[in-house]
Amino acid sequence: AQLCLQFLRKHNLGRANFIPLEKMKKGAHDRAVETPEGAPRLFDLISPHKHDIAPALFLAIGNTLVAPDLETATRWAYEYGKRWRVVTMDGKLIETSGTMSGGGNS
Image (cartoon, rainbow, N blue to C red; front, side):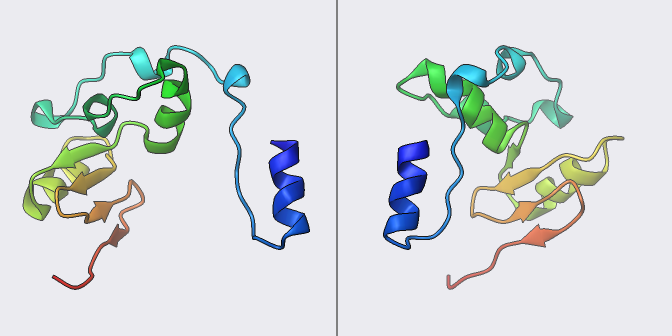
């Protein structure tokens, strides 16, 4: 990570974040989670080729749910006593804070 940061500085390529895999907590990504209506978690739908990156992947996406449409995503995000981060199949995202993002040309 230090060499990468030096390279970025030297070539004025901007900023980046690095996750030291050996320092990551193990196990959080393996815990069973009860989701609204049995919703799939994005993490469970991804199969990394290298299992040792799973904790870093979980750090990035957490318990994000995948919904088929915005109506379902909204229901899952707000109506189950806990706020959920939900992404739709077409890329709209509802954060636990309530903000929503999406758009584009389609």
